[in-house]
Amino acid sequence: MSSITLNISQRNLVLEKMAILVDQNRTSIIQANIRDMDGYSGNDLAMRDRLKVDEHKIDGMITSLQQLAGQEDPVGVERFRFHHDNGMEIFNKTASFGTVLIIYESRPDVTIEAAGIAFKSGNKILLKGGKESLHSNLAIVKLWHQALLENDITTDWVEYLNYDRQKTQVFLEKPTQKVDLIVPRGGEKLIEFVKAHASCPVIVSGRGNNFVYVHKEADKALALDNIINGKTDKISACNAVDKVLIDKNLPNKEDFVKNLIATLHGYNVEILGDESLSQYEEVKPIQKNTVWFEEFLDYKIVIGETENIPEAISKINRFSGGHSAAIITKDKSAAEVFMSSVDCAAVYHNASTRFTDGFQLGLGGELAISTDKLHQRGPIGLQHLVTNKWYIHGDGQTR
Image (cartoon, rainbow, N blue to C red; front, side):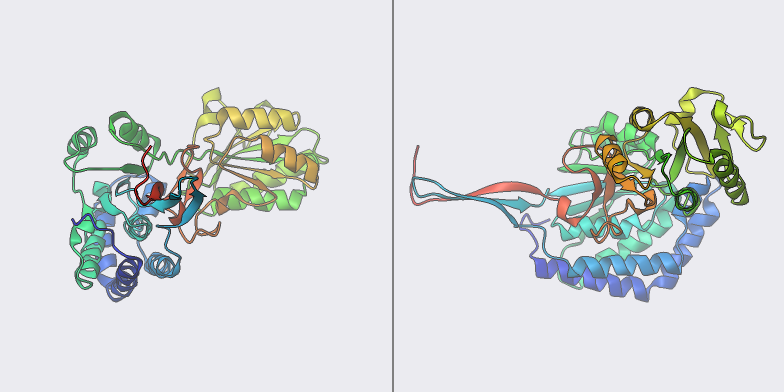
């Protein structure tokens, strides 16, 4: 691949062409995905949901590409300027990372969305998808190559690594080409595997295990809707709700709990509860305290009682994945205390954790949702998949 960065017109033309090709090749993408779906023998509901490609997902792929093509160039944006006393003009501007490796499980739409964001940011893309989505991924990468070639650009800009686990480990430890950044998207085992073997920086897209705290001054109807949406709208999402804490001083708490249990049962959600919930026969008692750490990605939830805001904050900061947490309350000052004290990438007041998503938060899509604090926290959008460098212009200055 040439070391010369593609200009913004070239990058946009590829993205626009890719959107057209995906639309024209809907049938072949879905047929490839059917092969993957037929070959998947697991019983993981979240994995199956992420693996499936239908017309709706293809519409999302096309929209993502079109929106990316319409966004401002994230490369070369001036962040700082300084005029030195000796006459030098000094600028700091955003710059591409170089080569970004994306390692992901089961989601063919990542082959579009994540690759598109990385490409728009001027990066070469290395894609390492899971074996369960191989046919879907190869069908999409074929279209990436066609979009590049039709714009007289080498296909080296988007490369698929069809590696097994052992070969992936070897590549991570001793890359056969320069890799500047790795983004793993998947479960905790994948992330730990990448962190253990990577020889370059890794953005950790960590576990969800998101909490909702129902404050004593909550609107109970709002709280019920919020919890049901967060738990049942999409169980495979990392922004789904797994834990609910209910303030012991919530008025008519027992009526709210009964209503919540009945509604969750209507969605076939398995309910685990602490001692305060064990009186209800529909609730299974918590067997091990470690369940508070778990991300379920399933129709399963844990409900517990808490004394007050400080205890709720303490419990969330101890057990959550640092992803998302919500407080349901009419008390704005209580919400402020909660939101400033909870150590999560996204904190909510009277809104669903399901909005922790690059598109929903105005980024036009996302590469991943980082639970790290460097270099970007939360959804990683187009604006964040850049580093920076210094430009110094002089006319012979020496020091």
